[in-house]
Structure formats: structure tokens, C-alpha cells
Image 1 (cartoon, helix red, strand yellow):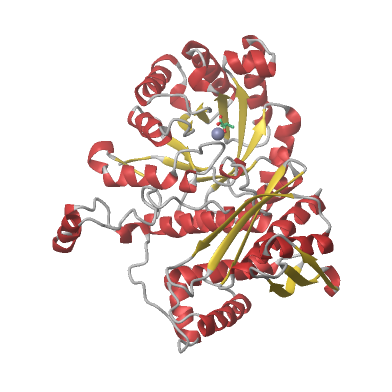
Image 2 (image 1 turned 60 degrees about the vertical axis):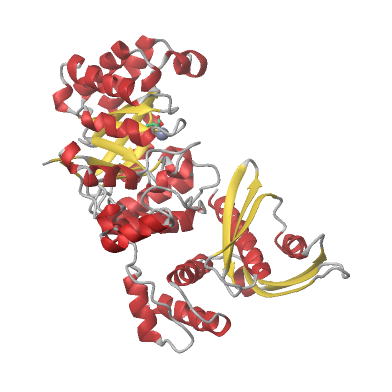
Length: 505
Ligand code: KIV
Ligand code: ZN
């Protein structure tokens, strides 16, 4: 069976989603999970775009060995040099060069003629070839470009050494049949197309990213660019899990395979959601909370009699934990460790001890500890490991008669202890004002949401905040059974991220 190359761009296009910024450690953690998932290519970042991105690509290239590690680059020598510098230690490095091709982009943004774009595309692929054999080229906004011009560019870049040519539907404008016809046209009209892999990169502005990708695969494309949970610029990219499971579930139709270990899908989805702060909608195909839950009586009856009546995929094949064993106060280290392993975590001894202490602490407050509680507390522990400022104490008074007041004590770099208090319009406002008096970083709170991790009055509350500073959005998360404490942790987490980015330059 022919294989479709899965090119994951969660860490590049996915991270471009507003507010989805990840730090180097988080990117490395996701890259390691993508390796376990079995993606063929990881697009690790866009090195020229920021020192943080450069560092992330470099670290991933050094540490993650099985997949091809790809760095995105503008079509100019400086960006290509930087991409190579970041990716050169990879076992199998790739440079991905893009340049706008459509008249709209050329005329209004680049202000370059067709000849100039054609020349730069060809020259920059040839330039990058000095560094590595594996070069990908994307004529940006291809779906709004005259096909004959795309054929011309592709022929030129393949002649210059491009080993993959990627056809982006940059603004999610294409309709499946039309996009499929473009792919057909490429195979028919680019004489040297056999020397290169044809790839597609579809955005979801009209909700058609997966449909367009699958149509292209049907017409001969053999690489699909996609992201976990479909995150990405604006409405996102084609969702990896939907593409992979469509190809697998409808083998009879596609007669193709991928190298993905599908049992790692659920875990990858949870990890990306946790680290980016983008929740997965309950009705999301494959990984949504309701994707395998049957509500209507007739469906439940059918599934009990024979799952295939209403389930086209086995939830186990996606790695959704089979049992929802509940731990509690009396569960020991061993039971906790086993449950962590079943959920796919392998923590160092030190991290395990911290997580176990947090588990015991939680078990004192909450009777039944479900898988989602464990995921939440492990994430909380991991978040706090590399903090600049750490919340040491927090005390709040509020109510319908009093003035909301918060006293906060923080541990600052070097172990210095800082404390202050503030009044606010409510307890969260008071806490944030007290923290601001200590940390003194101007920012604007743009989003604040609270969700309970499980049902029940004793549930953990997870708070997500987004703050904006100098036009950049930073996400923070915090979890606790006390939602004011969770709110403080989330704000602290966002501020710590902001400070880390400012420090990196
Ligand atoms: O959407 C797009 O066109 C891109 C390119 C860089 C491939 O992300
Ligand atoms: Zn894109």
C-alpha cells in the first residue's frame, strides 16, 4: 500500500494561532510526543522570525532523531542561512522555502513581477541546496494563482533541486473538486514532477481543510501538512487526526496508509491542548469529548449490542483510555505510578515525587481522582518548574459586604520574597492588582475563562488567561480546587511566559 507522508506543522503554523505561543521546553515536549506519534516530518519553527523560534528549532533538531526536522524560511539568503544554522544538527534536516505566487500577494504585498518571483524561487532553492539535499518549496497562495504560472514555478524549482513541492491553500479559499483539479493539472503539466513529492497545505477558513487535503491525496499528493487538533493561523490548518483516521478508516476507498501510531493520537491532542491553552471543542471529530459518547437511547442500545452499529472507529485505536479507574486518598505511590503509565506519562523520579505530593494534596480535598484530574495536576506541576516568579502565599477576603482585598507573597528570582496587597472590584481583580504591584510588567488582560476539569462540587477548576503586552498575546493556565488560587496561578504563568520572552530578547 502506498504511504502518505505526514508533515506536522503544529509547532510552526499551529503556534502561529493567536495566543498559542509556546516556550522552548514546551515545544520540545510536543516534538517528542510527535515522534512517538510517528509523524514523518516535524516543521519545528521559523528560525528567522525570533530568537525563541531559532532556539526551539535548534533544540528539537538536536534531540528528536526519528522524523525529518524542517525549518521554514523566507526566500532570501539571510533567512535560509538562519534556517540552516538552526536545523543543521538534525539527523535528517529539511529547509522549507516559501514565496508568494498569486497576483494578489505579488501586487499588493511583494510588489514584484511574475518574472522576479520565478527567478527568486529558482535561485533560493539552488542557494539552499548548498546546505542539504532535502529542500521543500511552497508557492504561497497557490490556490488563488493562475495554474499555468504555478506549473512554471514548480518546474523551475524542481530543476533547481526541490525534493518536495507544497501547494498551499493559504487563505482556505479552495473547494475540494477545484483544488483536486489543480493537483491533477500539476501532475499533467509539470514535466519533471516525478522527481519531487507533491504536498498540500490547507487552511480551514471555509471548514474545508481536511476535505481539500483528502481530495488532493486522492489525486496523487503524497505529503499532507497538518496540525494536531487542527490549530493554526486564523481558522487553523487541516487536522492531523482527522486526515489520518479518514485514511485508515476508509482504506477501502483510499488504498493508502500512514506511519502514524494512532494509539498516540488522544495523548498528543491532550498535550497540545494543555500546552497551547486551546481547548478542544466537545464535538470535534476523533478527539472531542463527545466523539465516542452516545446519548440517544437507540444508539446506546445498538452500541451495547454491537459497537459497529454506531461506531465507525474503535476509541481504543485512538488511545482513549479504556478504563476510567478512579484513585483516591488511600491510593499509594504504586497505584499512582501505574495510572500515570497507563495515561502515557513517564516522569523522572523527581517529577514523579512532585506529582505524587500534589496528588496526595488533592486527594485530601477531593474524594475521587479521575484521569482528567491527574492530567491537570501533572500539567500544573510541569508548568511551575521553570517559573521566574512563584506564588508562595495568597489570601483573599471578599463577599457582598466587604471590599475585595488580596494579599500576595511571591518568591522572586534569587529566592527573594516579595509581598504586597491590593483592593479590587472582585477577588480576582484584587489578586491581579496585588501581583502587578510586585511584578510591575505592563499588560492587558484580554481573556479569562474558568472550566471545571470533572463534574462535582469538589472539582478542580482550570483557569485560562490571555494577556497582551507590546502587541503580543501570552497564555497562562492554572489549576486548583480553589478557583481564586487557580486564577492567581494562571496569571502568574502568563506573566512568567511574558518575562521569559522579554528576557530572550
Ligand atoms: O499557509 C501557507 O501558505 C503557509 C506557507 C508558509 C506554506 O503556511
Ligand atoms: Zn499555513
